[in-house]
Length: 56
Image (cartoon, rainbow, N blue to C red; front, side):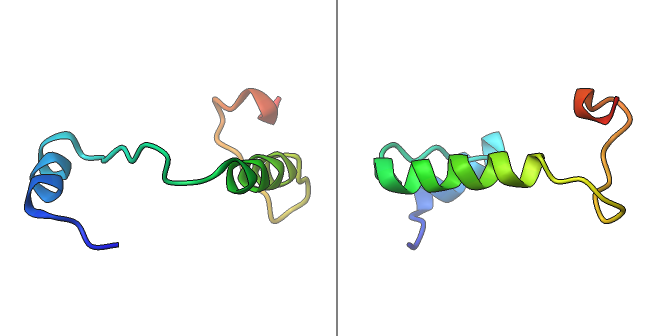
């Protein structure tokens, strides 16, 4: 994907871009399941911010 000049300007102004319907429902499901798995990990390799409710 290549950004056009308007998208670049919007990113420079807002600091983010929003793409509607970029992912289909299957892709969203995969990302949700993977995020849940990653957030549930424990161990010495996991570092959480002090204000993270999951860190308590």
